[in-house]
Amino acid sequence: MNLKQLEAFVKVTESGSFSKAAKLLFLTQPTVSAHISSLEKELDSRLFVRNTKEVKLLKNKLYKEKDKGFYVYAKTEIQLYQYARQMVELEKEIEQVFSKDAHREEKCITIATSTIPAQYVLPAILAKFRETYPDEQFRISENDSCGVVEQVAGHMVDIGFTGTVLEKKHCRYMPFYQDELVVIMPNTEFYQEIQKRYKTATWIKNEPVIMREEGSGTRKETEKILRKAGIMPDTLNIVACIENPEAIKRSVKSGLGITIISRLAAEEEIRTGQVLEFPLQKDESSRYLNLVYNKNYQLPAAAEHLIRIVKDFYPDAHMGK
Image (cartoon, rainbow, N blue to C red; front, side, top):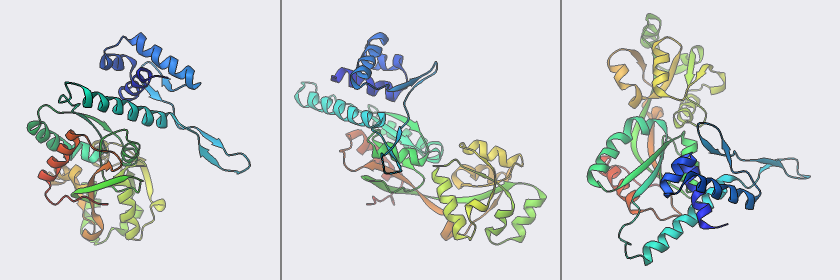
């Protein structure tokens, strides 16, 4: 295999498209396809799932360890991507060291973010980043918190933003914004009465509940809060699991059920009376939004600049272990 094949593999993986990868590499699409085909032959492995809309890496493969009775992960296309990206980045570093144009450093940083930071925090931060560093660019992908941390741990992105902390080797977190989770309910007479009558959240176990998807930071923090209140998550009457906070709020307004959600996401609806709020105990309902990066790799200058902007916005931000 050669670097051209690996570079094509990295660009197809990141862009999800052979045609987009070709544009980024200033190659023709047949050339990119040929590089990928040659790489697949050399590795004796199919690397991508292709359909009419996008191209995706194959999922991790499980196989049964002989005579051990349990399943383990085989070497995956994700690992290949991690290795290939490191090799391509090393090639660029060598070129920058010896090139006359070394000062023209690559300034595009890759950011993975979970939903709440993406929709309610990052826009203002990135606007300030763009204003302060107009020559630097960024590429953003949205995922749940688990997915974000996996991408950071695998060095698939430079920086991540999450709504919870997940223990993952090599990941360092910087809590920067203290968020609050609240219960929101349809604005009906029934829930107005609940709002007046109850002081604790024990009533939740009797109501239809809308939850975020598995892997969401909000869901993980919600389950922690419920356990502290003596409510086991598996006893809830969960009527729906929805990824998008906007869709969740519309579902609550329409009467589908109640939910626990970031105040950042619901403050407008609460303020205007579109939904009712049931506040949780202060010591139980707060959580931090976090910036996360892989401490085993040197951050590009543009990523350091972004961290500086986050600290400017939130002076109490501090780097964890």
